[in-house]
Image: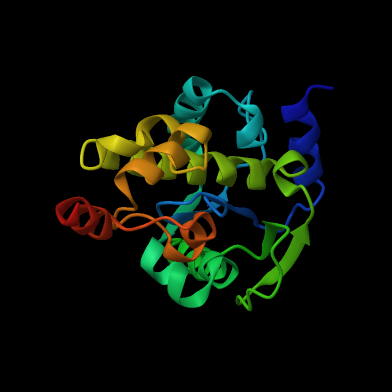
Length: 213
């Protein structure tokens, strides 16, 4: 049994409930938002290739994203930016994004499968599953929606802040990204509570330092 078939059968066992999956992308990066997605996928036949978004290539994720949103019974997306992450912390920001994704659904599920996160206090039965994106078909589909949505946001920011190569690293703390931070300082897209661990200055502080030299 291939991975898609296996996780599809996992969710199919919950019928006749209306099953949704929820996942997020972007808890770990130094810059950009955290994005959550919620989706109800039909459980009559699987879309081949749906699996944990981290195990799917960027090209295939983009193709699967289009198939998922066309096939979905309903889906919603929640986006919480870096300033809110700094204000309420990444866990609470993730929960906020997840609640926003749920509320934006045009149809409410009767059972929500969530990748690991508990305590969402949503108006339906909720089941948190560790490594849910590799266990549940609906969670895997949500993980692809969240990941592709966030990647597109970061690619769009690349033109505005080219020094950091956001199109390539998506805001994650790669060696190249950290090196750029040390040269250019942080930009308004960076999470101050994350980059402080690297003793990184802001761009404005960097500019003032240069002018004083």
